[in-house]
Image 1 (tube, helix red, strand yellow):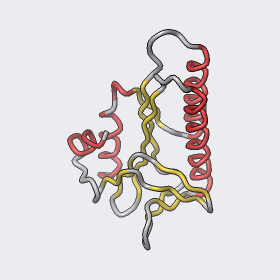
Image 2 (tube, rainbow, N blue to C red):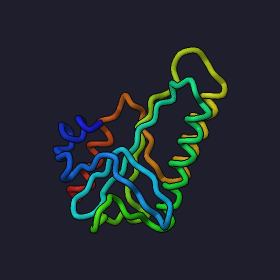
Image 3 (cartoon, rainbow, N blue to C red):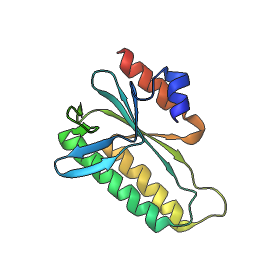
Image 4 (cartoon, helix red, strand yellow):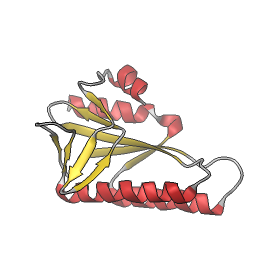
Length: 146
């Protein structure tokens, strides 16, 4: 994903693109894969793969991440660390790239996937299949330009 942000969005890692930023909401902490910043936080993004063996661990990871997003949607969040973290407003753009379940049908894995899509819809998270990753970088570029 970082390569797409650099190539498609013309972002610079460590400057306008922050890898693995921490999000703090009250005493709660979580991580995103990327934050696109330009004076403030324009977009947060995360990637999830559903083609996994341990669906229990995946479900727990999703629930934890969705909790941080739900808190962020209520209160906003401080993104990054150090003396001057950036503020992500409650309505900040959040995108998820996901790799759909593949291979042999698995009812449990499919249920975890459907639950994730449902939660992201409720939380206002733009979910994009991994085959369309460039959409997230293009949207980030548009947000920065606006």
